[in-house]
Length: 474
Image (tube, rainbow, N blue to C red; front, side, top):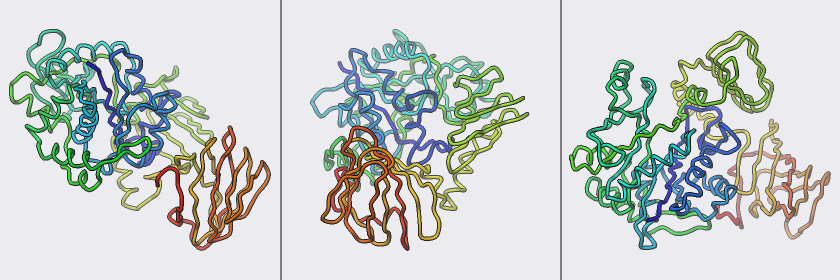
């Protein structure tokens, strides 16, 4: 029986702002190494003999970045299912189960978040083996993280009597506790942190969902039946999926299955250096810290400072005589917070949303399927951007109603379509695109193309684009 890794990549990671943004969330960012959290998640099962290509369920806005990260891992055969709107983890897993059964088989599904850290991969795989035994027998398995301190930021799982092999009957899920309750859970010894990871056969999930939340199953079946393939992506019907109720795997199936007393809800202990890196202090706890207990990245200089997390992306950041601070510098925002208050970063993000600040959604560097662009300067009736186009990629054939553009090539070779003309530009050459003229920029070379674009006009918003052709289906 094959095992399919279902990676749930729909989160936005608001507590890791300003590094994590709605259009570039934490699972796509290399927080602790060269690979992103999504890539690390995928690689934990890569090479296991029983595994089939993975399924990633993600937000439509992230689709091209997810596809590129799979391609860089050599996992281009993995399927990417797009959620037109977020409906929590139960509908996401249901779409994956329907996709997994398309070939007529009944694989075991391992559903994991895309944005967690697991430091001991061998121990993780060992726990998966125990869970697989239960899942093959028809159980719905979750993995409970063995706690090492009374944590108030996680939900908990209570275990019951032991089962044959390694595992216990699942008794109950508990909400995030206060400090005294968390201490009592740790002292009792029969509570685990809720990892948000689950394992079961695809048919078992669909059977249990039909039993406890049939309206979710029906909506997902309609959305899947009316869906279509689009290049690297599987698109479900947006209207049908929008009508699906929101619910988590825990609430939709696991809790009522545990209450039923049938013994089909199972928890397997997991002691593998797990963290959900849901906040800056959690990232500080799992990162490689220096002798003063500081976790630093980028151009950082500390003096007489202890217990800090300091990230610098674009300039030198120095600290003197401070302790237990979070300092995160990006091109367009700086966060300074005490480690005791990092859970309240979400409240700051909510204020930014209320003021419709663009820093909630995107970084100054914005990623597109063809590459990226970054705003360098702007003022009245002008804007300057640095544009990077990947080898072999091209922007859409497009036109603007309100702006003209100057392009200066600083690296690589550009193929330019301007009205009826088509020509090449090399380094230090430039061209002008008048307002209202149809145009396209392509990179025919083998190295990234970098250009400086100077826009001028009465309106310079990104929505002033009329597309005529686009290889990415936008």
